[in-house]
Image (cartoon, rainbow, N blue to C red; front, side, top):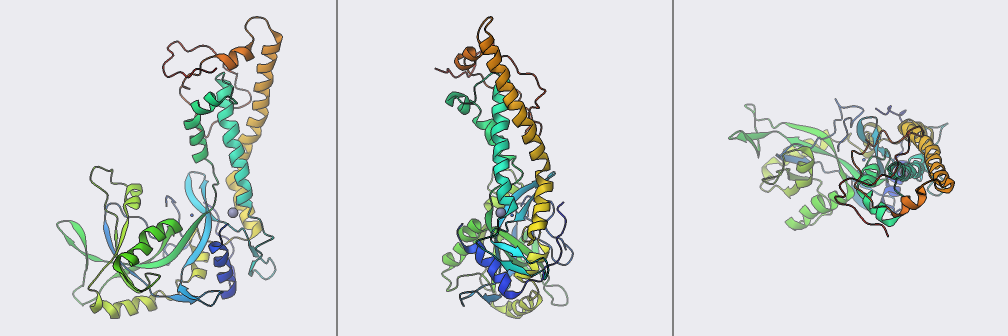
Length: 385
Ligand SMILES: [Zn+2]
């Protein structure tokens, strides 16, 4: 797990500057999502369920003087940290002053170490599949071989430990306890014997795309005159289509957001929840939500170095190993004595690679090169001409 960075004093101006970088063109499956799960938990996708939620009504005035929905908008890199999937907030254009610990905004000058590390992740993808191809006797520069190893390359692409940053939005929601009927949760609020309603506040993080297509479209569908859902009661419908496996991924994909009507009699509760969520500000999200946390250049560099350690080790082994493999191949080819390996190398049929190694254990330079023997049963072969 990535360590929690030092608390930052984020002024309102700096916070809106950070968000401004996120809205300029140009972070689930996480097993840990909040650095303070007791007081500021992050909402987890429920499996095949409908949820009633209230969206607290908070707005802020942005740098251009416009009133907008109070939410943390940012870019984050999907990362694989050991065995966990998580997100690392991109700091392209964001800098923390080390002396004052103030978050500054240096759009032009600050590079993000995670953005930079992506190049190395791509190098590993290329060396990894090419080494496998060469080890099995195929020339990775041939188009037919590239096609043959397409699926394998895709696996390596998905295994990259740091990926390109994507746009996200984080805001609080209040999940309302509801009545059960026939063993299923309804979206009718449950009122206890003392007349109380029960709600739990969570951070909700969505990809910007999904926020626009699912949340904002709910407003359009309901023909409401607003550009956000603050102050609305919504049904988050995670019901999975029949025939699909009921799991988190399918539930998340199935999400439909609808406004819940006839909630006027709950307006006092809405006011109460607005007050309750006053401390759930973008600055608080930037302090406690793992994907939203703002790191200084040094802190993100340290995080990136730790995430990238294995990739860098593999990359250095593969770089050496790959040129050794190619040299060996050329040596066999030029030494003559039988069939020139290079000739065979370019002309033989390409067989489906069998039993591919796990992406975490690519070939090491000491692994012997497999001679390009013809497959005994040429099923699914591709001719190379
Ligand atoms: Zn970045």
